[in-house]
Image (cartoon, rainbow, N blue to C red; front, side, top):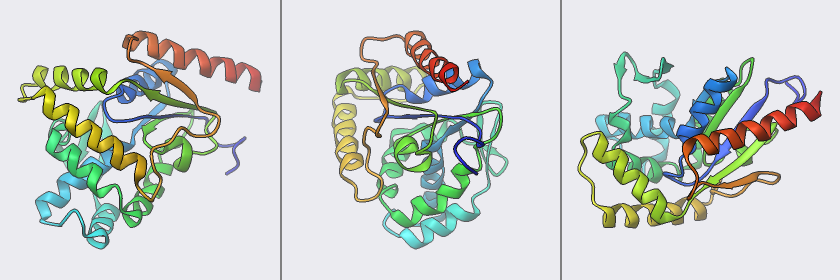
Length: 226
C-alpha cells in the first residue's frame, strides 16, 4: 500500500515519561483516529514473559511469545487474553523490563507486523520510540515529543502516587537516565529524531497546549495535501 493511498498516520516518538502517550491518545480522540501505544506491546511482552519465566535475555522465546500473545485494545483498556492489565503493565518494574527486552532485533521484528495492522481508516496516531523512524517512515506528520529529565521524573512521580504506587524521585531520575541512554544507544532502532520530524518540548507546556500544537501541525499538513 503506497503512502498516498494508505490511511494517514501521525507518528509521535519520544523518551519515557515525555507525555507522548497522553498527547497521542487525546489527539486520536479529537481526530477520530485509531490509537496505537507501541510501548504497551513491549510492556505486555515483559509481563507475559515474566509470568512464563522467560529471561529478558532470551530473544528467541521472547519473539515466539510475542507472535502468539493475545492482545486487544478496547475502550481504553489493554487486554492480555481476557485480563485487563492496563495498570499492571504501567509499574516501574515492568517498564524497566520492557526497555531491557526492546533491545532484541528479533522481538522488534516480531512486533512490526502487529503494529502495521493498526493502520486503518480514517487514520492512526501511533506513539513510541521508533514510530516515525522505523515503523511508519511515511507518516504524514512526525513529532518528537520531549521534556527535561527533571520534568519527566516529576510527572512519573505524580502519576505513580496518584495510582497508589510507592515512588522515590531520586530512583525515578536514575531510572529515566538509564533508559534514555539504553534507548538512544541500542543497535536496533535507537531513539532518534526522525528526518522531517517536528520537535515539541513539553517541559513547560500543559497537555492541552501540546495536543493543540500537534493537531494544528496535522491540520496544516492536511490542508496542504488537498
